Length: 355
Image 1: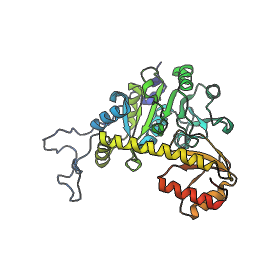
Image 2 (image 1 turned 90 degrees about the horizontal axis):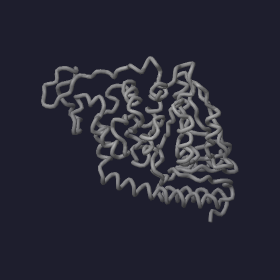
Image 3 (image 1 turned 30 degrees about the vertical axis):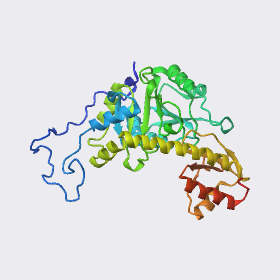
Image 4 (image 1 turned 45 degrees about the vertical axis):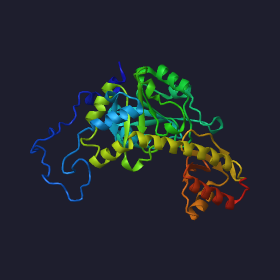
């Protein structure tokens, strides 16, 4: 059995919506579209016409960018939509479950709850830099564990799952679960994407996004990559015309070679600033721990998380408080050099030498 066999039985034969045919240089009287363009329309493709039901050219560009065969890829509205599609496809309400580590991205559990699926969690330990214990993950699974989500680098800890550990998880769990590797922050790690393992491991699904490294969070564009049959089923579940014409066009532009090269330079700047910030934070007397990070953020523990977040906000800087799950822990996103300098100056005014 392949992991496509883990998909809900009632969805395996589901066919995608059949959209009205689109043929260039024809009079289109088959889709109930307006025959005129809005005067505010400034796009290459007219907005009075529906976009492609699935953006073929964009899928090919993303396939090239992510080094993935387009037949294994579905364009999604950010990686969040991919998480939703996967949870709906694999989990039967009131019966199946997902497994996540803790702490991690909260939307895995959110979509499981919406679907009526249970969530199992495996805690990671701060004293071991939130390392994922493969044995513990496997022990926490049961025969109803359909999806195992691994965010790597992990949000909010910045932890990167080493390739040998990922291979072990893929091999030992086999076709009993789909292993979903969420690589929203992989470009900041300097490590290769798990996409290169897709041919080798038929239980692997990889999520990518343009929100972080390409600075396109507002466009809401990402991709889910995996076995062809799983992608076919997700395609049938996804809403028709999911990607709007303006988004398709702006993302096509973002995937031009010059734009990608510029983004790589920006990523290198963020990584350098991350290391500078983390080093500086360690010198403040009220900062207790700064954990290693492979992302565009880092996690730290301070002596009074609420007070630090409140003081920063008073000075116009927003930080993310994770005190509910990690007492006195704060996640800091790496900003521009000027923004980071303002943060360091704010911390210096709070106390400690910061030298």
